[in-house]
Length: 358
Image 1 (cartoon, rainbow, N blue to C red):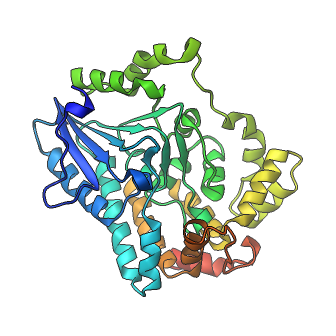
Image 2: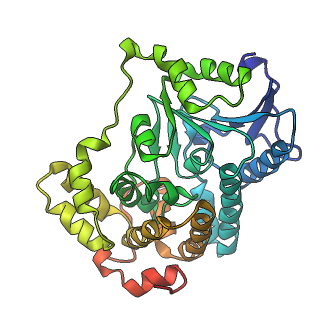
Image 3: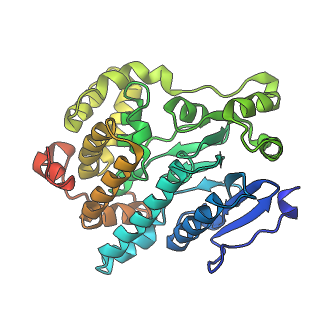
């Protein structure tokens, strides 16, 4: 059955921010705010939590498949403009409550009792990573553009994303966490954020395979999709070419030292990364460095607990509202950060974000 033949409907009591359909043995989930690249607002989060919880115990649904409406991508992240408005209105508690509910969805996906398949085509950023990368089968395409770009807006990589980035090969995850760099599908697989890379045209074949066997894994899907690549050549990961300078520059725990290494490195790519890093929120960069190191010894629920703890700090920190303003509201891309540089962020402020512990 094609998508057009399915009966799509909101969860009971919810709007059409997310639509659902039963497709044979599959429970289909479609993020449905295409004009916003399916950004997750509060109603979207509440809808997902309700329907995914219901389907977890529904015998007729053998697997869940997530995708996004429109042709731009799965999800551009959380609706941070709306969160900024709450901050400016003096309601940071509402912002923290949004993150609490969002992280509950991430935790549910990570522990889902049935196969949870995410079609991660196009833009997959921030909160979009949270509702997809924690799934059991993560499918990216040659059109995937994935990032955790939160330091750009004065925030930090949340939604449990640091669990993956802290476990990526070498310091690749640290590089992505601090700079917010965007990667393609092949690099998403390398980083552990996805399982299989297929052509964008393979969606119908992937769905057909899942209808036949809802437990079809990533390897089987990859084999099925190989014939879709032009002359059999799938895109290759780009990060390995920069692995030497990335591992060298991002070693250790001091973000200021990392920045110095990048800016003075012989590699032009390293210096470019340094320039990007220097433009990010200094407070965000310093906290993210600490958070990614701590995440390496945590499980997913613990990382999500850390995310919520940090969220309380960032909801009240001026860099969050300022970063969203500069990038998404006024779009002048000239944020006025609270600290002049990452070297100016006191260690005590970083530790305070984690509750003051060393």
